[in-house]
Image (cartoon, rainbow, N blue to C red; front, side):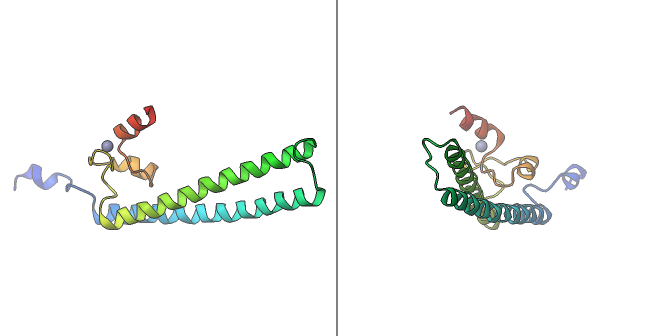
Length: 133
Ligand SMILES: [Zn+2]
């Protein structure tokens, strides 16, 4: 083995990389679950407010506000639930060792990208291509 080989980073993620990724996903999952619980409470409040005042969504300005708030809470909740599914899928990929690979081109995903976006399934290049459509 040449000195260069000895100093080179081992190919692929180390056990520490996997542990760090697992911890990031756990943290993200906890905050997402907490956010969803809080959204559940505000959804109940919005519904209760709508029931209490018995407003007409279409003609009462207050009703329109409640309808808008309700739609917003629903959107946030859907986003949170989608994030949860992404986190669970990422945890599965982590256990099977495919977490570090782009699902589109099969190339490696930069560790920095996975640190910033722990649930990403694509390398920067494929994600950019997907965003362009
Ligand atoms: Zn890719």
